[in-house]
Image 1 (cartoon, rainbow, N blue to C red):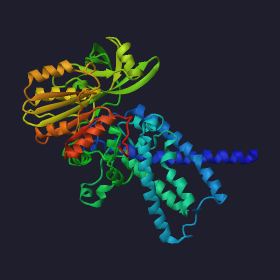
Image 2: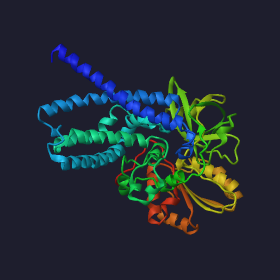
Image 3: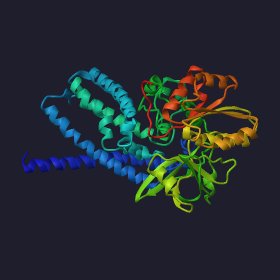
Image 4: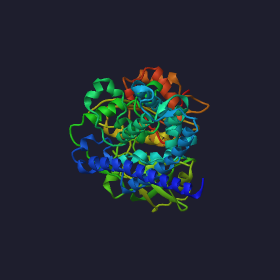
Length: 501
């Protein structure tokens, strides 16, 4: 290529970038202002998350990510065009070349291939070996907005669109069919990141209920390891990766009678460390006593997002609260040393240090009603006891007629967090019992679970612990016939769901 051709090529790339970026961002911006600004007060009851965490800082970052994504995507187009001109692909531009029937078939088959590809590629991006390097960029947006639609690592759209680059070599593919599918994909992606649920109620009585709605994908952003589908729920249902409480959650959102109270949790607020207490040789509890009362408006089991600066680098991390909103006048996290942040908290943090935090939030929680009498089976592995301990103490203090059984597995007796507090609870409350399981001594197996379930009628089951531990327990519970609607588990971002156990 001579200099003039290079200049023309670069000019066309810049023009294409501007046209593509401006047109896509225009659509996204219009939707954002209509839903999030102009009609925000009227749409409150359709809001999926009852907390606002997406502020201007997040949106600016999402726009930057989107610009990089669109620019990166433009460099693949010339490669495809060159391959087409060389006769290597089966792309055709004249819609009438194979007839209208084939064009319609082409649109449908590409949609099915694209939807299947997205499910498996998306699920693969959640593997720990890939997640932190690529997909974590998208999951920085816990509270999604329309601007989250294109906010990816620049490699991710290339991976998620891999079906296009494969299909064009296998069978005749119309450029119109590709364009239609990409446009539908953009609109579908935009719908999934609205943050509001607008699918009509009657969908639930028709096959349309198997379409992925905003709530379905919103759950994915808050809980990570499930609900991977783009357009169809079929893939999640078939492979068992749809969250067990999806139907219940979408029903709650759609059947709200009143507007949800939206708490602004889009900015970090300063809290101070008030106390540091070693729990075991591995675990330490960090206490906070914020003056802002909103920090105490949380449910047992929820977590807190902390923004911590360690040696000049800023880290955002999530920690379950081990304190009880029913009993305690402080916040407490209990951490084991396994990362830069937890090492800092255990070994370097001091009383009086200031840390940035969001208000507590999370879908792993328990709602308490003093007039109810329920059965709870709490299952914890290692440091998974932190949110479970908050729940147990809160239930015993507020829902006094309920019965709680705790099954608690650890690698060693010395590493058992809150062992004395749990013993004190057992001595104090007749409606609470705890069983301990130590590696190499006593194993938490299906027989133990069966016995625990036999002694309780229809318990609500809460699980928290390492991924392998939770996976095993869930298999046992499924074999024992526990209703999935009664099963609750905590999920964080760095896991994935294996195809084979």
